[in-house]
Image (cartoon, rainbow, N blue to C red; front, side, top):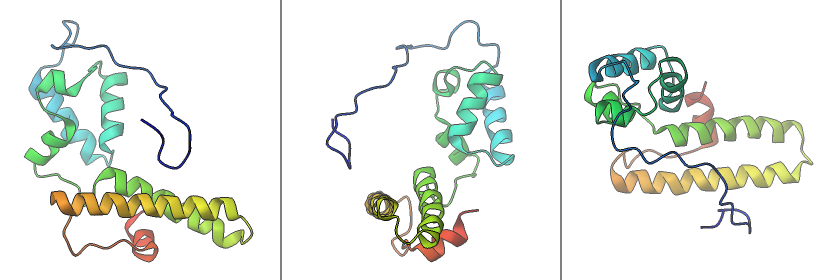
Length: 151
């Protein structure tokens, strides 16, 4: 597999051990982990941040092994589904930040290209999520609305 916007392969990164059941040293029950996920979501944490907090502070190496469901499925069951997927929100946040930088620094053509690449990625993900029915067909991306939607 190659990278999207470069000519390099980019096959680095560590792999998690292949586990099929929850380790014996995990003390929380399935319901306790689900309650923690809902509580952390109520504090405004993203799904990725919830996973990190559960791993680092509550000794839950995998929510799927502990509960049988992903964090997203747990939040969907509780009716706490976010209006936009997290990956689009993160890309929109980067685009808004980079747009502010490009407006201040008119001659920074490298970051202007970076902004175009981020926006292309947002549009590509938008097409996918519309096709899958995750976001409504009428939703459109623009930098102005992204600035309002992102903190």
